[in-house]
Amino acid sequence: VEALEARLSQLRGEEQEAQQRRAAAAARVEALKLGLERKDATGELLAAGDRVSGVLGSVAAMVQVESGYEAAVAAAFGAAADAVAAADVDAAMEAVELVRQEDWGRAGLLLGGGPSTDRDAWPPLPEHARYAADVVSCEERLRPAVTRALRKVAVVDDLSDARGLVRDVPAVTAVTRDGDVLSAWLMVGGSGGGQSLIEAQAALERAQDDLVTAGHAVE
Image (cartoon, rainbow, N blue to C red):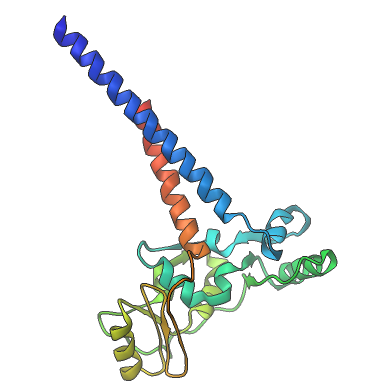
């Protein structure tokens, strides 16, 4: 009997811990969702999706980035990282017209349905570098735009590798895992940039996975 009671006490403790983990995961999911809510023209456009045919969602939500590459890809995308994905140019024009009519400001749109992008002219990379386009997954209709936005941008570990890559392959733009960008004609880097939408979206998806796992543990 004592062994049974001890086992029941242990199970109650495990259940309580699982419930606490689930509550913490749920709170984190809600906090991350709030952080992704936009108060600018992009946010207004996403909220008004039912008024514009062909608005697919935010670029951050429409692309999937390999873990560890989120900051680099966000930096490589530049303004496109904060853009809205549109099915085609007609949808984008309709969206911009709505933004103008409502005086929401300015919004960027990444266009689907474009012509395929030829990568034959992209130079080969050393083993320590990967093209940013190769660490991003997306719908096929967005692939040409994603590839064009990340044209000849390669991800490396740090600025030392970036400098060496640009020296040896000057046609390539290098971006580090931390999001510093270096090319033969431009450098962007430093600190204080904050978390990108792509990084925030990835964090939300991980938190949602954690919530599902915690829910299963409670069940």
